[in-house]
Length: 245
Image 1 (cartoon, one colour):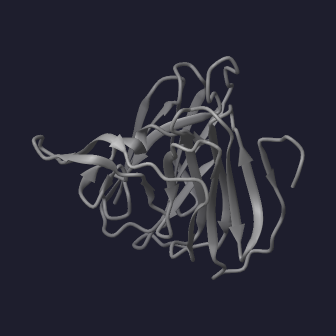
Image 2 (cartoon, helix red, strand yellow; image 1 turned 45 degrees about the vertical axis):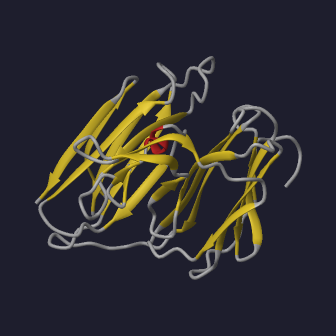
């Protein structure tokens, strides 16, 4: 690793059971916040200071509970395959910020000030285990790609959104509480989320929008047992759905 590239990586053999570690190094003494994929392949994020129970569903609101430089989160992925994802911003959106990704104690990828000072994100395929499915026990995959980017738009190669989890709940709700931070942070092109649904029929559903207006063309692909069953592309926000019987 070296140079001034915002994202560097090296090849490390895929060893199931290896411990994965996210590390954030920030020069912003007031802290940082963001979201990251946990051991269950679920996006989690900083909590906000309060919870509003007045609406039909509870929601976090207020100031984020900021984290500080040197934060680490280590785990062994329990969901297979596993794609690491972390996206963070400094509290002041200034100063340097770096994400380091470790596997088995060895650094494998780093992202610094990407796409600008005070912001960083990275994604990496960690466990590429092939999971097979059948008609009655299918394997489903969401894929999101960003193309034809408008380089004048901030985070032009990224998107924001949400999707249905294997238990048919939306991933922006954590323990039954909506966390708006999960809609604030850029997700790089190339998301692959593969899973077996908890029941059939199952509604595949994914909402995606360019991070900034007209930042890029967003393509959503749905696969069932490795076969493409539905696809849509747009430069605007969109929701794709498909029912697996």
